[in-house]
Length: 136
Image 1 (cartoon, one colour):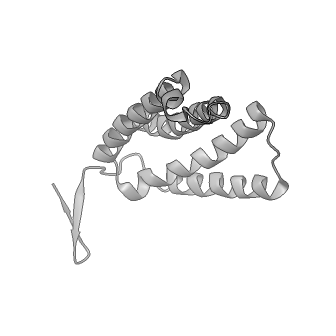
Image 2 (tube, one colour):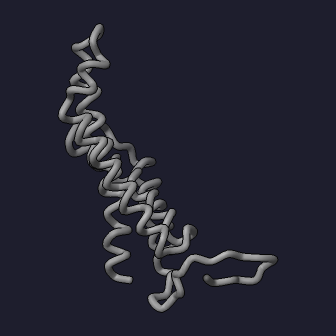
């Protein structure tokens, strides 16, 4: 389960990296009004964004194969907090107190959900029929 949590944590990190790479791609395209599509597909930043998305997809599929969706998906909300922090730190974008409060609430929610997952919880795929849990 510990290795699954490590993989689980890579998902928001890769999502944040993808957004950085896309931002860099978009910034580079600002000076290419006519041939922006050619510039996009020859951009190393765009290639890195695609690579990050593919890696994230592969890890996410592994996580979903081992964890309940209701436990795994809330972690994706951490991406919002990471991206806001990166935008402030790297690009100098302003962050308001309300955004900081919202980020704290997101992190608290993810912490609550992660804390509700006992280490010995059966994480095998399941189906529910009329409230009965049927494990495969």
